[in-house]
Length: 351
Image (tube, rainbow, N blue to C red; front, side, top):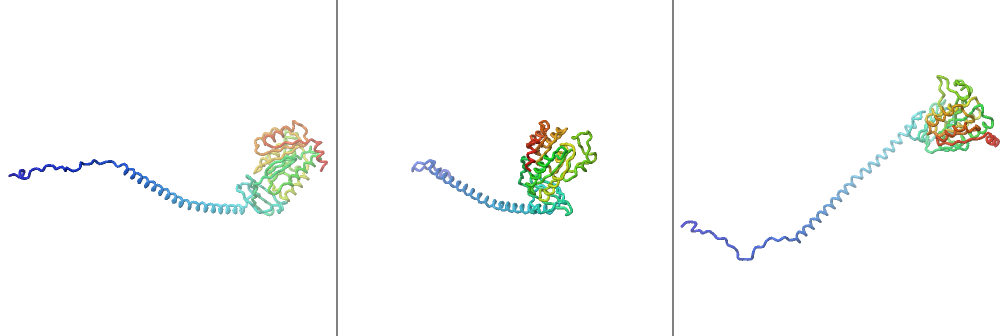
């Protein structure tokens, strides 16, 4: 008998029990798992935010401390820079940082000194030269001062006065003009710088002898209104004078003692004023006479319109002659005033 016959092929036996179940999707189990995963994700996100927030705070703190240290270092540097500038001797007007010097200039005798004052944006450098040597001071000039001359008001710290000392100025005119100019100077303190430029035909700085100065000028066209510097000579550049007590006293003497001379040329005092460094903030221009070439002065004023010009027609009495003075004031946002000779006589009678 063969093995196949001895071992017959086994037949597949099926259980007669319960029928086989097919796997079924449990939705509640899926929902539960979803909620669990969402909760875990939310917790993880919150933990991440907290870690980042704490880390940011830890990183910002050193930056704040660094900023404070830098600010302190910067303040120390600025103090050292200011101290260096106070120690450095200089008579130029090139300084650009405000330096406060605790020095009362009114206590300095300046009768033998020349003051050169430079201001830039409210800051002054005062250079003093004379028998006492060189000195450099810085003044805090942040506050603007008010000037009032013949009732015309202007703000600034640098005022140039262009004053007519021509032969046509009569005694009443001179008396009133001198009184008004001295009264204006007396209102200034040492924070204010002035320059007095007198003129007739030539122009000259207060304190100079006009009769000697005339040797440096010529009048090629003749007449009273065509004075020019001689070839090879340049008029001096006026200096700024700090209005200390001694300076004002010295200027008062120049105002009272300067003699009259011939001619009336507006160009020359303006030319001198515009050469100053730094330049004036405000110009007060007073004259009693017309000039043959007013249009030249008007054009120059318009080219320098940032400098305010306040014009005083002092006994001219001619609308045609006053018109250029009005134009100069209007172009620079200044003020124009005219006084008649009878009005001037009444003013003189009260003095």
